[in-house]
Image 1 (spheres, rainbow, N blue to C red):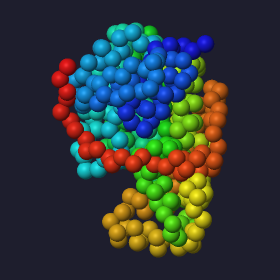
Image 2: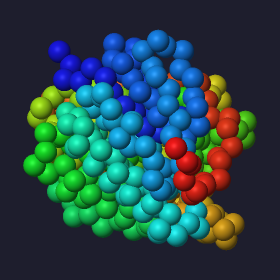
Image 3: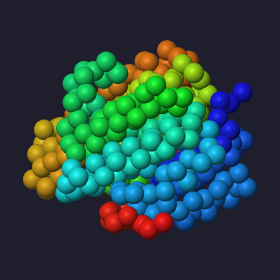
Length: 328
């Protein structure tokens, strides 16, 4: 039997948040779906709530009223550029503090924080990353996520509200946005692509496997007051990822063996050094701690990548961030 019956999901208009709301409603939970702007879900189990901008004060006490658990997926993503640390702190750290304080006062049973692998390492990292790898975030986004994790644990220490932190790697699925959407659009081009020689390995996470992990930690006491990396079982090379996306998009492979160093040099000259780093650098993780408590990812990566390509990325253009708080 599920531990929680009524669940608050923040960031309900985002890629992950929308999937979480639908998954929980489909499984019989009552869901309060909180987002900046009003959003309508076609389910009688979902109550949509507009909270405005969470970068300052917001009605946290109202959001948690009557809920058994919180899945906090709202936040400022790493896809934003040229933003000061204070912007990430306001949304990713301070909002978590407000929500955790309210959850504690309301005696909410479970608080799941959607963090990121970037709280632990940079965009690339040598060796295999596990939860025992010392956290060394390399940018404002990662630092804010790590700080949010610390705030959550501190705010809920000694309270009846148990917390769980999930650190997913790059998530993919139909309707995805950000870096993965860019890669999917690139793979769908009817042109030869210069990626056959890329040997860097990357861990990925299908949205289906992430949803499975969220549901699992909501239901099991062994996930209480702990942090978990979340990833598909096996990493893939960049070339393998592109091939799977090409298959899903109905394109022939058409991958050319351009030397990795040459490709990286061209990308850096084109003003895309971060893209070059991601294509040529490893980021391999092992979700060993989550598997040890009984979680088993239901989806296989190559098939899930192909299905994602068939569904396609989001067609929405990213919206510029705003920081003025809404009035309640």
